[in-house]
Length: 487
Image (tube, rainbow, N blue to C red; front, side, top):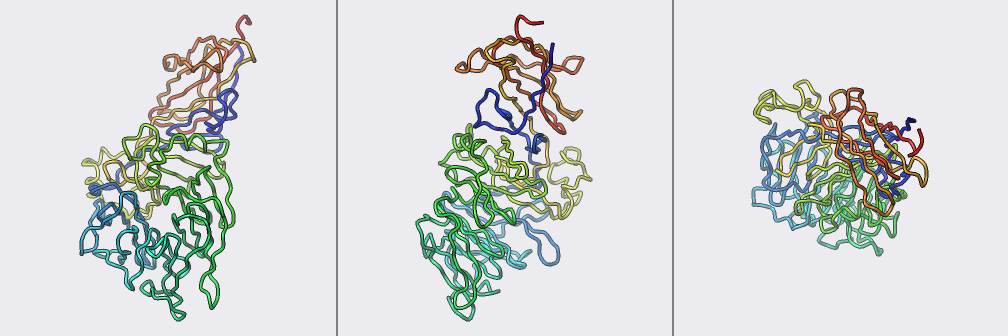
């Protein structure tokens, strides 16, 4: 009986099922070109939790090389001290975040600035005891960034389309002045409200329906503002992800990469339609994102189908060198780039209660100082990194017909998956007509020859592979099929 090979290929849920150029399902895996890699769950890095779900977090290093991580919930700001979160809120009382507000953070020298649009802008010296009000009476703001040597606040209580910047090299100078170069700008245009500002040598101001560049200029002006996108903006603060030289964002019609000059579609014809059907627009404010620069990945956590109320339960993953996607089903809040401050043996024991129970070995780099990873908070509000136990992966091939219009008999399949520790099961999907619902045979385990026995006649076939216990690489499946009536 002849065999044929079906590579999984890129996950393309927006494509047709029959003869899909890629795969129909890619769950709890990491995309990597024509391969899929395992997606690891959260390894807890704290033994204490925030008092409510995290609304933002940042990891930073001071000039001496010490690492600090800060986070915020509805009423408090925290610092990660060893394996525990300490309340470092202002001493004057709790914060009063709104129902959908988030904390935005920016590093400025050896200080961290935080804003949530409702309370006074906060500042702390790294390692300090408490946040306090930023000096100079700046306006309240939804977003903060550092552009050159200026602290910039966006969507202020002046106006939802206003940016205001501090004096040159002075985060406490907020009175407009030619001497300090502090000033304010209400950005003209029909762009809606400012959603987020991303800093750097230049600023990029993301609106609901536009993107405006903020560029340094000479006297008499300090900054010039130049529209880059006049119709397309970001659906929420957390949908905008800073990846260094480029930015990624979710707009109302697709996912995009923005290079500071123009945007390029990422998900059209691939996953965009699927994403907008799956994501709950009532909770776009709960989206968070982070860039894994080591693996060239962008991750968006969001509230999808089967979520418990407003808890984000899925992560859309994008591998930008290959332009491929996948999705992970895991409850997380406040994705962020995390830099480890390192752990002692006592600290590791405090995380799990038993060193033997750690999902990563004691010599694993995840525990080392300076280790860069993607951090997040679980639904119990503990922080962690994605180096825990591999999630159970599900990959489903395209639907195929061995010969158009003919019924084919498939008797065996053999997944092409590397990794000796995995436990693999296979479900065979089939239907007689394209208008019919797909039926699946009961899952089967591997036989003594390393294959999976199916024995099913149908006009259309597909193969769903479930991988538990981790693996190294998943490529596709080989299967044996023949046209009924042929030998």
